[in-house]
Length: 312
Image 1 (cartoon, rainbow, N blue to C red):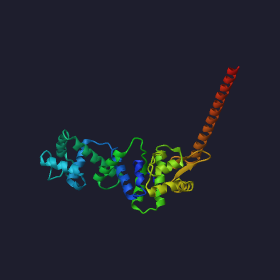
Image 2: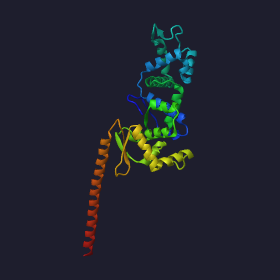
Image 3: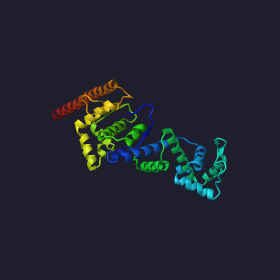
C-alpha cells in the first residue's frame, strides 16, 4: 500500500487507541504530531529563521502564530522594530530584509522566548514545504506539543506514509479496511528498524489498539473496542487478517512448529530468507535445548552419586 520514495510521519502508538471510534480526528492528530516531530529535525540558522518570519509578517500575516504576530506588533509599537513600508524587505525581486533582521537580532538578545518561537515557526514552515502539505501551522504546533508531553519513555513510535494517512482520512473506508491499516501499523511498530522479528498474534493485536503489549492493556476497554479486540484475538479472524496483509500490504509472515511467528516486509527481505532465519533460529534453539537437557542430566547424576557416597 505504501509507495517508493514516500514521505513518512512518526507518531506514538497510543494515538491508535481512538482510531476505530474517531478515525478522522485520530489521523489528523497523527499528521499534526508527525509534522511537528519532523519539523524538529530540520537544521536552521537564526538569520534564515528571522528573515522567514519577517516575510510572513509582510506577506502572510494570517499564517503567523498569534504569539509571533502579537510580539512583533509589540516591538513595532515600542519602535524597537521599524518596518520598511515602501519595499517590505524587497530589493528589486529579491527579499533581503537586512535592516529588519539587524533590529530583531538585538531584540533576541533579551527576548529568548521570541527567538525560540521564530525558530520553531521556521522549522514547521520547512516541514510543510518538504512534505508538500498546507494547513494551520499554529494548530499543528499546539497539538504536536500537547501530544509530545504524553509520550512516555519506551513508547513505540511507528512510522506511516503521508499518502496512506491522507487516503484513509479523506476517503470512506470500511471497518475491515481500517482494521487492516492498524494491523499494518502494528506490524511495522514491532519491526521498527529490523528486517524481521519474532512476535506473536496477541502482541500484534495489542499493538493494533494502541498498547505496547498485552500487559499494558487496561482492565476495561470501550465496549466497541473490546468487541473488536476479542474478535481479532480469535485464531480464525487474526489469521484471516494476517493473510490479507500478506496479499495486499506486502507483509510477510512465517510460522512452522514454533511458538509465535516471524514477520517482515517485502521491501526488506523475501519469504525464502525469512523462512531461513526462522528455521535456523529453531534449529539453534533445539541444539541449545539439547545441550541444556544434557547439562541438567549431568547435574542430577552427580547429585545421585554424591548421595550414594554419603550413605556408605
